[in-house]
Structure formats: C-alpha cells, structure tokens
Length: 298
Image (tube, rainbow, N blue to C red; front, side, top):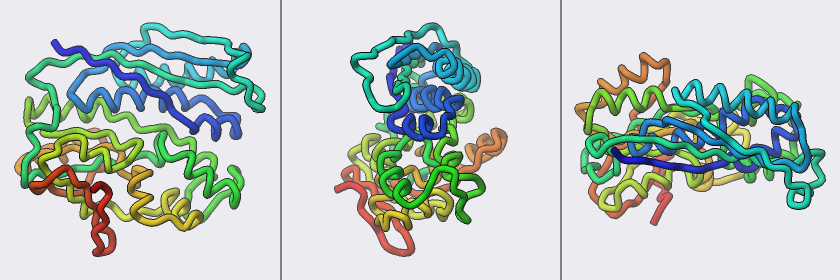
C-alpha cells in the first residue's frame, strides 16, 4: 500500500463569505481542495481532519462550516475522523467581526499498480478537461481587486445567472467519484492527472518535463471569467495562468482511451472536453486562443 497525505485551505474566498455572511459551502471547498489533489496520484480518500481558527467562539459559524465539511466528505465517500477548533484572539485581530481560517488534511491510500505519477505521458496522448463550477477556490485576490471597485456583491450582471456574490461563493466541484471510476476502469491506463488550482494550467508542466502540453480546444468562456477579464482588462495569458477558465481537472490518456472515458464522465453527468494533446518537449504549456499561441511556461 501507498499512503498519501495532503493539507490545504481555501484562501481569500473566506473574505467573500464574510461579506456575504454565508458560510455553509466553505466546508465543501475545503474538502474539495484536498481530495481533488490527492486523487491526482490515484489515491482513494479515506479520512479527513479539519482545523478551524477563530478570534472568538461562534457556534453559528462553526455549525455552518461543519455543514459543508460533512457534505463534501459524503460526496467524497470518506469520513471526517477528527478536527480542532482554536480560539486565537491575539492572533486573529482583523477588523471583521470574527475573522477565521479553515484548513483540512486528507488521508488516502493506493497501491503501486494504480499510482499515477505522470511518467507514462508520451507524445500523441490527449488531454481531457472536466468542467469546473466557477472560480472554485483560486484567483480570489485578483478577482476582488478588479471586481470590488466596480460592483457590489449583490449586483447582478448580464454575464451571470445570479448575483456576483453568489457566483463567487459557488462551491468547488469534487471530482473524486468520476476520477476514481476511470482509474478503476483503466487499471494503469491513466497517464496523468492534474487539479487545476493555483497557477492554473501551468500546473500541467509538473506532470512530466519530457513532453509539452498543447491546449488548443478549451471551451469558450463567458460568465464570471469574462466579467473579471473585462473589468480588469486582463490579458489572456494572465487569465489562463490564474483562473481555471472553466476547466477544473485534467486527465492525460492515450487517444484510444478517450471515448471510453467520455462515456464514464457522461454517466456522472459531468461535462468534459478534449482540450489538448502531447508532443515531445521540455515541460512547456501553451494555449491557443483565437488562433494565437500563448506560452504559459518557459
């Protein structure tokens, strides 16, 4: 058996939740940021620990956070085996009524036969992208910087189907069940897995430094991504280096496996796209937008 551990939080998305006074989905984000990372090596999430730091006791806030944690754990088929709530009044002294932080650790297991390390990625492989549920839990510092001076959280916009605040608090999608299903179905046929979070598509370069990742068929973006890009006059390169741009998870497989995987994702009602391909190289990630190639990594 191979044991896997991962720890992560949800960053400055918490600030949006504080402004909205809505905390019931943050626990889902915390679980997702951990389990989506641990499945990238083929590990099955087994147990989860949470850590909540508060300025002062707040039973309502803790209860709302636990709602999301419980829902996320259930969706990931794992148990919450413990946790810690710390009151740090001297450390957390922001001006908010009750500043807090939420962090989680996931424990998972796999074996050497199903371990996915990216070393099998080769020229001709295809990159499949699984759709995201908005920003997920990354890029919020930039999003707040460009949106907050121009809009209020309760504002609606023609690009969105809900208010800006509601859009920003959409929970991170959990990919555990569909990804573990394809790993089980292929038994070693999955060449690479990447959770598109901080650094966005640049993370693909970590999978294998002997190939290049060519993204040329990403779904056309509107919604919150279009709103952020227009509000901040942000370049395509920065957008695709910061935000998931509608793709929250990537799978690298041989071309012959694509149709089978698409069928599995369809059973999970998860939209996916064939977004790129692999060539020989040195770990470079490039993206073609409107016929122009942008190099995300050197």
